[in-house]
Image (cartoon, rainbow, N blue to C red; front, side, top):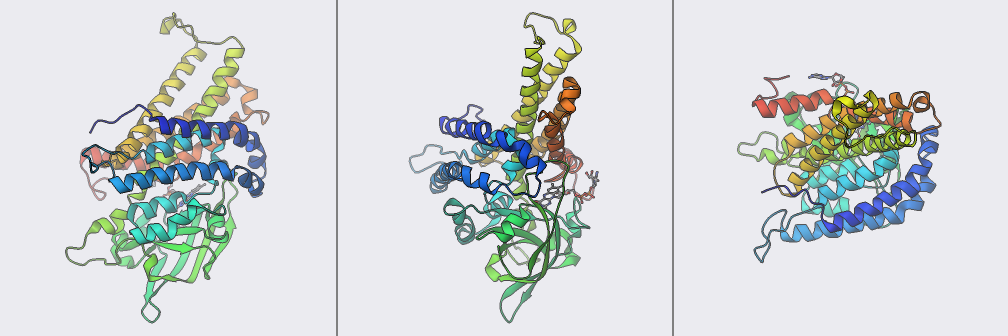
Length: 425
Ligand SMILES: Cc1cc2nc3c(=O)[nH]c(=O)nc-3n(C[C@H](O)[C@H](O)[C@H](O)COP(=O)(O)OP(=O)(O)OC[C@H]3O[C@@H](n4cnc5c(N)ncnc54)[C@H](O)[C@@H]3O)c2cc1C
């Protein structure tokens, strides 16, 4: 199926709304929350909550329509009905991150927990855990995979999930670090966390499953809030699980580990599909930061008389003019890869390769563009008077979380060259 690059009207409308929120509300408090890292933006969140609800309601309505008619499949009247959910999400995220990426991350939503539940949850789990995000008070979702000894090497996860046959509950024990929205999701009412734990360490990745833990579950304790280089409005926590008991039905995917003929789709591999949707989101956020820095720098230089004459040959341009052209090209390249990875998913096609490509490229692009902008603006770029130095700090995380640049490059290489994880490390 060809990938449509024309943005549907409904997505444009929603995109305009988020653009307005980003410009009128988020950007104005960006510096404040950068300087007050653990002073949560409660008042701000309550203020913009109606906008967010409006956006989510639009998303939900759309995804319900799609579910009814099938995901990118023929509907009853024979016409193709294609989801626009991912494309919608990347536009929304790009715009909000243009406003402030840290604030975007901590706006109430099911976030990565929602992506995991969507990827592998049963219809009942989707209803139990995701419906709550469409109404009522602000609430947050988080996903915790990383541990002190397990980041890129997820096979080393030590958090255990043991089934207590007496109570038919899972018992979680272990420590998770660097959990985005970890403290918001675990403390506020109705928040949810998706926790990756192992049912059998000897099986490595094949023994791992995600579990949903609801806010306030005894045995789950936030032990640390990180102080960070960038995205400082965002909440990043360490969480300890000590005999944390959750219902049997909170496991995502099948608990069967090695049953002959068992569908691996519902196990670890199925749950990894979370990243097929979340990597394009990270890429979109990176693109929002990059665009913010690029537009600001381009406009500032234009006010100083530095523009790009359309009739000049490339060799006649100054170094700064060439830098501007290069930045714009990189921005477009990163965005096109991001749109492609999202559009493939909406079309119901595999997108793991494209999601990793978009993630790698956008991480590189945002780092390069924001550094270049600081450079081009000179001391002003380095000064806290402007947000340019902040965008440079906010940029780097996009090359770290959801799989580092190196790890996603490996994924791309394995998929293109046909190597397994063992063959290309
Ligand atoms: C602000 C922030 C928010 C985060 N949010 C979350 C979250 O919500 N949930 C969550 O689970 N995690 C989260 N993380 C964790 C993040 O996903 C990990 O930090 C990341 O996966 C890298 O793991 P690591 O820190 O253990 O680094 P390591 O895996 O130790 O990597 C260190 C360096 O070695 C490189 N490297 C590792 N293996 C290879 C290899 N095979 N080939 C080449 N290079 C390699 C890496 O690319 C990196 O440059 C967050 C981190 C930060 C900083």
